[in-house]
Image (cartoon, rainbow, N blue to C red):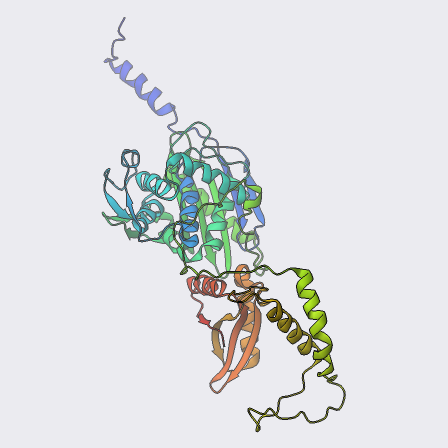
Length: 463
């Protein structure tokens, strides 16, 4: 029997009561607030409840995209061919068409700023070949980042069985985005961006424009999740990250996040040592990150035929060459007689060799003695590990000023400068503040990260 529509005044009134008495969103509430500098928890509520993350998921999709670009698996200029699967994703979307090609950088912008579902799926497929492969990588990466309560079934965050995360995990991810990829973090604060097909506008521009110091990160909404947000703000050198799950509307969510950020700034110490999060620990994530590099970042080395030397053969040759070398090398603490000049260069007098140098020369001579004709022998690597590069972070009027800047910079960028040596060099124009003893890749990465923080930085080559 069909149910007759209520057309009487009383029936209409009852219908309105039922409509407005039923909440549109009844998602559980959870929150987390941390001091981003140290990771200290300042407030939490239901922070470990596994809930629907909605489009906060795209934070991990973008983290993996940034990681893939940095590792050389793919480039920002790679042309991505859009699949039917990606093109068919429901809104919010960029409007991609199956078979269309678009640069990866535009997909990143659309996912970060507009929260486009089709762009997020296209990113995952471009990086891992399929959405299934990408979600497996998402799970491994999440575990490597310490997101112990999260599991993912897609790249965009639309509700799916088993696609769950927590306020704690998403706050952890937001902190990693800020510290691990500062060169890309500004994407999350852009009010609008060119996404190739169109100019897209930020889903969180209300909070970005109304809350002092807010500079990201990501919104999310589904009926099952409610209104979610992970936000970051910086004031006077203090940075707070807050996450809310289960807001009842955009306005109430933004108001709650603003309240939590205020709480964080009121509880965070004014001065605290900056301790960036540890790099992803892929050793405990069963293969995360162990992907094949799609292209080489450096030219391939010329093939070199190497000959393995028997340790016994080398030792025997050293034993034979060492007595003669040591006999010619007096102790450096003793008075040494003038060394005869070389016949081929009578005006040059070589300096006396130390016993250490003599032993090294003996070992080299031994290697030459046992080296097969026509082959090149690789016997050892430089103990410096290729650390002949460095960076310069400015020129200053005094040594003290340069040393202070070096110390502050080292604390700010401890992730790439922890093994570097601080060195102040006097020049005719002032005191140069340098970090030295770095590999070329580490020096370049340090400069990228410092430049993202508006710190002047130039790389220094060997010599």
